[in-house]
Each structure stands twice: as C-alpha cells, then as structure tokens.
Length: 365
Image 1 (spheres, rainbow, N blue to C red):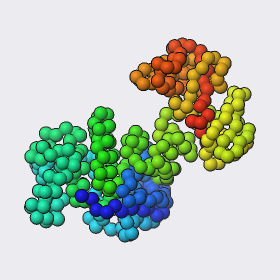
Image 2: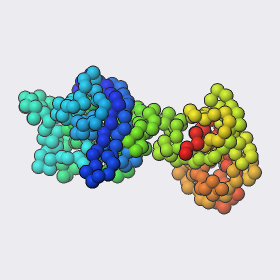
Image 3: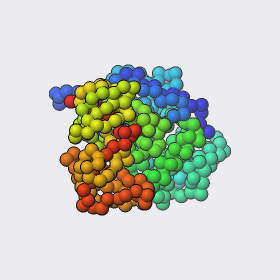
Image 4: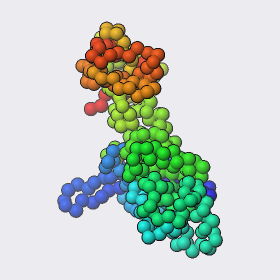
C-alpha cells in the first residue's frame, strides 16, 4: 500500500517566534539536526514546551522554519505548503466529520483527488481491514469508542499513501488500556507498511515501546538521540535519565579507571562502575545513576547506603521496595520475589549496586 520509504532530514532547523510585547523572541526549536531513515519510526519525546510539536509542524508545513532546511527524501520542502508535501498527520483531536460514515471519513482524501469511485471503494475496504474496522464502515463516528475513532483517523491518513506519517500525541485522549492496545496497533501497521513515521509524545512508555529511535528534547534543543535501550541504559545527562525512567542519583568521588570503567567512592566504600558517560574523568566528582533494577537490598552494614524499608508494593512478577535513606526515598525493584529475600516494612537494610547496571554521569552546574 505504501510507496517506497523515504528519509526525513532536518539541517540546522530553528524556529523563532516574534514577541509583539517588546520582550525577547521565543526560540521554540534551536538548530535541530537529525535524519529519520526510510521506514523508521522516530519519536520526539520531551516535556510540554520543549519544541517537539513545533518540530513536527515544521515537517508537516504548518510552520515554516526561521532558519535551516527540511528534506523529504532528496526534495527540499522547507518553504512548501502542507498540501505540496507528501505527508499525512494524525492529530490529538481526531477531527472526524460527524455527519459522515466511517467509510466516507476514510475516503475523504481520495475524493478530493477525484479518484474513480470503484478505486476509492477498493482502497477504503483495504484500509479499514488494515486497521481492523472492516465491519464498521457504515457506522457514524459518534457511535464508535475512542480507540475505534483513533483507528479511523489513522486510516484516513494512511489511505492517501503518504511518504511520511506524522503523529502528534494521537493517544492522549484514550484511557490507559486503550493506549497500550493502540501503541501495539500503530507499531504493527507502521512496520507492515514500511512507512517512515515521526511521532510526538511526552509519555516515555509510548516512546520506548513504539520507537526505533527516540529524540529527547528540552527547551527547544535536542539532548540525546538513540534507540530506546540506549536512551534508558546510557543517558548522557541527569535530565535524560530522569525523563525516560525512574532513577536515583548519588554524588561520588572518582578515584581511578580505564576502558570506560571507573572506580568510585561513596560513603567511604568503593564502587566499581562499568559504564561512564562522556565527560567523566578518572578522578574528580561525578554523579552515579541507578535505576530501581540496579539497586540491591541486603542486611544492614553489608551495602553502601543504610536505610529503612518504608513500604513494599507487590506487582506480581516483582516487588517495589521504598527505602528511606540519607539520599531521600530510594525505589528498589526486586524481580522474581519468590526466589529472593523480601525485607519487611520497617526493617533496617542496606542498599548496594549492580556494577554492570549503574552509570556515571558528569556533574552538572
């Protein structure tokens, strides 16, 4: 159904909004450089106001860059209007026509292009089957669930066979279970078509589960680009580490190291850390980053940090232990709890580290 996949390239793209009240201009996106490979799904992830939606709107043509270039394939589309770009956008608000049936909503773009009726009917049937709505073509959008309406919006974008599919927080109006189901569905459809896609969200779970790569943004700037596992396991800053998952930070002294590994001291005890970010020397101060699954509980005095178990939360295949310590509340994840010792609430414990799972980050000003 989809055309041959194409790339999307941003070269030094900046968007500056003029302030009409005499204040400084707002730089929504600052010198963004990245390439979305053909057939790849890349997610722009970040907090509200970080520039991710503005970036998507510039790719779509709804906003024009103040500086830089945007290419779809080898074509420079920087100054082209939306209708001259081979893109389709799925918005947060579904924007379905309430007076039209599902089939007519999906067919709308093809009718504008004046395709023959038989061809339109064939493509509508194929596209509704692709999104699992074959039996609902005659139904009004108002009689559909939220998840079904989102599928109609997705089908309406896919039927015009865009080179690039753009998705602007399309699942934010759905409840948790529907979001999970639609994440899987969008990923399945995108991969089955081989279509290039750019997805915008502030939800880290969406980003991590959907994406081939994630672009983390803050204050209009790209902070890190990588696969979901790279972003989660090897963040390059405290901001990225904290935004993509639960984490604790500890100030440590680096006392040696080589080949990427470092020897550190915390609370007078040595810690071997297998991974260090760029900018962490073999001596000096650093920040130790530890995810809940990289922390271990032991008897008091056996680990690096003393604490007391405040609460245990049972999650079936794991238990989350919340431990009060001098470094604040620490979350320790205990996988397969039936095979491990679980300390009772109120128990005095020590917290240690898995040296292969923690990471050193440079100290930030």
